[in-house]
Length: 234
Image (cartoon, rainbow, N blue to C red; front, side, top):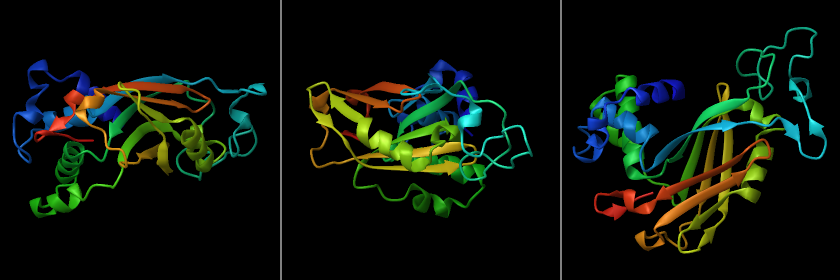
């Protein structure tokens, strides 16, 4: 689905870039939904490069991953839970999304996408939108499952230790919880940040950083662009 998202995004006509906020929900076009989910103030597409290296021990190969094909009998499934087809090499990069999945416009866009993709009745829309989490939730979508070669718990631990939000005004927020699961050949990662000290437009800018050893992430979000229905929404 991510590949389809990003491919379609490159084909969008610039005139439709702001369509989603000029038309009331749920009358957004497919192009507007796609734009909001893959290239908006709430969702940033990025390409990350991997350095398959144990920092203490030096480079390693696909054979170092538990469950990988070591040249004997074919191994059915991926290294993390038996999902997907056998591979013979490590990915060197991935196209990912960093998305504030708890924001109302994102939840509405996801609901519309699922409603139309699965041809569900309109009466299901409110159920699909759901209710917001009590936290800020940053979703990392599109990372290959091989990243969790030591288990999803290791990825959760790395993010709990390294992930951080920093505002333009100097405030720093660490994660309160991290959830990592496998979805096909990819990971679904949700990083939760407490709302105890709520973000405001006065914070101006939000920088997210994280170090997963195989790669580092740094992304900036402009809070003034994340206003929806008259208020900051993330």
